[in-house]
Amino acid sequence: MLVLGIDTSCDDTGVGVVRGRQVLANVVASQAALHAPMGGVLPEAASREHLATIDGVVGEALTRAGVELHDLDAIAATRGPGLAGALLVGLGYAKGLAWGAASPFIPIHHLEGHVAACLAEDAGRGPPPEPPFLCLIASGGHTVLFDVPEAGRYLRVGGSRDDAAGEAFDKVARLLALPYPGGPALAALAGDGDPGTLPLPRPMARQHGFDFSFSGLKTAVAVFLERHPDASRADVAATFQERVVTSLVDVATRAARAFGRDTLVVAGGVAANRALREALAAAALHVHLPPPGLATDNGAMIALAAVEQVRLRGVPDQVEALAVDAAPYLPLAEGPSRPRDAQAPRPHDAAR
Ligand SMILES: Nc1ncnc2c1ncn2[C@@H]1O[C@H](COP(=O)(O)OP(=O)(O)OP(=O)(O)O)[C@@H](O)[C@H]1O
Ligand SMILES: [Mg+2]
Image (spheres, helix red, strand yellow):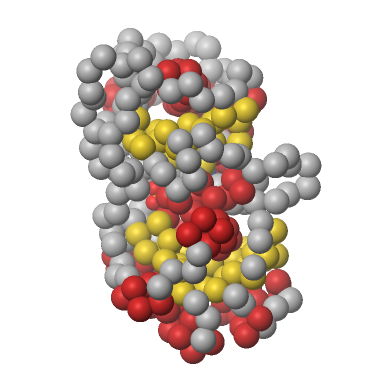
């Protein structure tokens, strides 16, 4: 099945082409330079930039994949969650393209796209993850844990009570005067530092649940830098990164144990982090991660999610699919879930 996928949920215009689980092309036009002077994404500017670049990015993805528009079996796009105006561009473009090419249109949940990145076939990678598994999504907008008892079912078991992990990386990068986008820059600086020396707190260290909290750690970094202006920035970066990574890995592995899962799928932009990947390699679980280049927003992951959706549920009804609107807020979880031996139900909020 040959599918073109489009993601314009935030500030990257991503277009990918996949054949089954094989990624033929993955073109991402980053808007980082446009938003850098603001230190964050300006939604209106993001929409306009998507509009200006999407046609060229689609053309380049088709060329790189060596396929023509009429070869495609389906066209997929992110429907949400994300920035409303940005989503509208990719969604509207994909619907029009599908309509014009008489190809089925498949709307995709952005977070399902992040998870589907782990399905990509890649040299040296084993078979794809098979449910049941536990799934951690750690990105710029989300840090959430799902139990996935069967393909396509997401039961929320915990998540961040404040900042997402990627958001915390970006905010602390700003405190360290690192260039936008901050996450990868902070990770690079952390590589030169010592994570063992500074007195930064361990978030939610004594909880029995499966939540995260990163804004207190961020404030602790701000206070520390104010009191110790001459401290090694690399050590601060390394210690902050160690605290985030340890929190993610500890809570995810504890949740996997509580839910009786021996497989952990980790997705989202923070899954690109090398320290996190190294810590996960030491966990006593079968860990699945997206290949490098598919962790942060891209179109190939949307195409991979579409292939998976068709495999599970067939091609969607086209009257319904073409009527799907952009959904800035769109929870993925379908309802509450409890560890196997839990006594009392725990509150469960939306996927965000
Ligand atoms: N190597 C890295 N180390 C740490 N964080 C990283 C790294 N690479 C990317 N990130 C972070 O990942 C985030 C971007 O990921 P992604 O593109 O999945 O998020 P998003 O699309 O903005 O959010 P969402 O998917 O929740 O809507 C940013 O916050 C970025 O700082
Ligand atoms: Mg994303």
